[in-house]
Image (tube, rainbow, N blue to C red; front, side, top):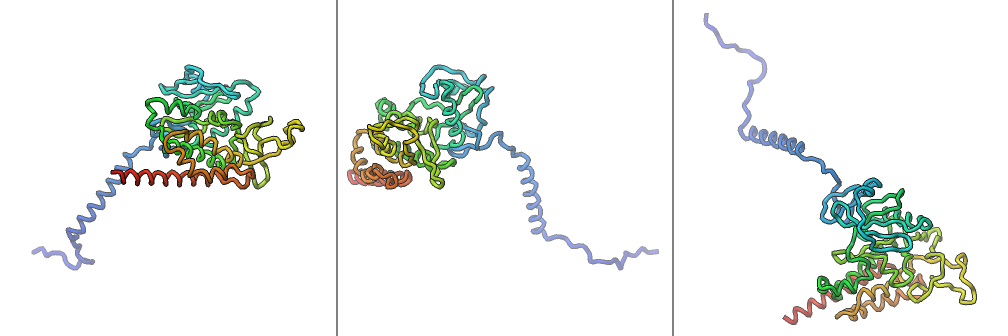
Length: 350
């Protein structure tokens, strides 16, 4: 018998895929496999990445470090931080130049128990206001009344003239850099007046030296607020205003509304002293800016262009003074204008 081929099977005969379609499917499969392999190889970093000038709440970064670390604990402050020498002392804190992991840091300790509330207020402000405008908090220990912050070797803003007289920094002694410092100072006030906590008033500013001592000059020649022990909160909606301390203030540096209004014949009484708002900070801007501008070539021209805004800052009526943001905008416009003028003059000389 002959064997015949099978016939009559149901369904169409299978077709071969065109070569082009097969190639595309192969490439798609390879891409999927490659994606899965790469996904397995990518690992999560140990710490959150640093945003420019920012870390998540409860974290910090220093120098060129590209990740954020948690604030140091009491145990870490006790065992890892080594005080080297005392570098400053105020009514609330004593500050020690210290060392942590071969880095210079600033360790602040409570001076005396009766001012502990001010010390803790400063700590709360440091925790809540971490930003490019405020010194970096590295850790704290309430049990030991200690706070650790970033160390800035150039010291307070009051050292500006001495710093600019150093050979290393003489090239920065120009109206441009000085105006940038004034911009930084006003930007800090604007930040305080629109802080995450609300409108804060810079109360440790009864005279020019005291005001300058509240700020630090950084290595890249910017300004950060360092002392946050006296930042009372204004609430305009509820009518809650502030008073800077419980003693009588004197002098032309403080705003008129901060002076005792009832004359010399009436003894000062704290409960009779009227309250005020953040416009008391605006009154002081021209005096601080004049110090920052100094007396270098071009600084008088800057003062001329700032005359109108500074006159407005000195209005006897607080409500008529500009906001810190308005002053900041004017400073930036003057900086841009004078820079453009200087650039145009330089080109004409070539």
